[in-house]
Image (cartoon, rainbow, N blue to C red; front, top):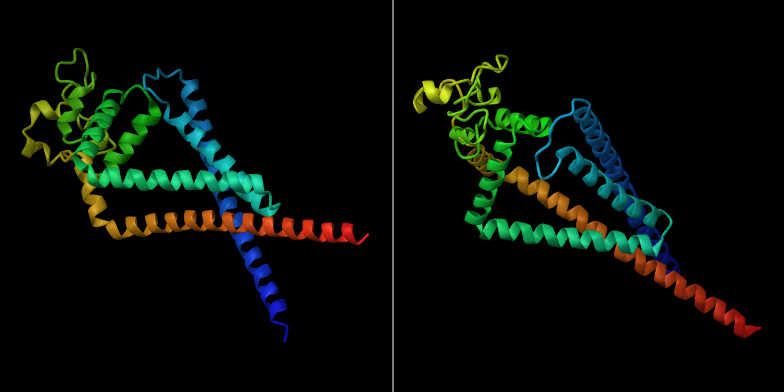
Length: 274
């Protein structure tokens, strides 16, 4: 039996597995990127249709489009680089994955070891979102979705809505003064006025029977603790796919270099033979 032939066949099979693994994964990412771009474009066009004032430092719909375009480009490099065995595209793909993976690890460590600083940053961001709740429909829908989904209200407390000019207790000629958005209501979410005046008319214990009084930061923290195994599994799976992508791209690049070196040697030997 020819062991060298068997070994060569195994290498070819492994090369094909790696090649089509990278191709398949990036086709899926490609589809996700197209969905992001489409959803972001639709949201942005709908917002422009109603001439909504945007006072945010960033536009959520534009952020979605930019993320989609970035994923599309990376997936393109991975797909075409693997399928055509293009070293340049594979190197771009590998380097970007390494950078993203490194940034994810650094972010995770910083969030874990600097908990108070992270919470302070979150508090500042939440306050900014609360202030601009009425300025952007994308942001408003996102906040309403989070409050309804996590069964919470405001950042650290439902009183955080006092930072918004429409829900502030001193707001003049505003029906929403001293209230909260309808997404804070426990049961009556059909009536958009269910949270109006609740911070003025009711004590905290009385308000707890009508609206959620726990802040979304604490609700999110509790949700993460209760679902730590799910979050850990998803994070591990995502990290594993990235690592396999990095190692796979590196392996393909080495194989391409070997093939080029072999072809050059054969060409050189043939040239000298003549």
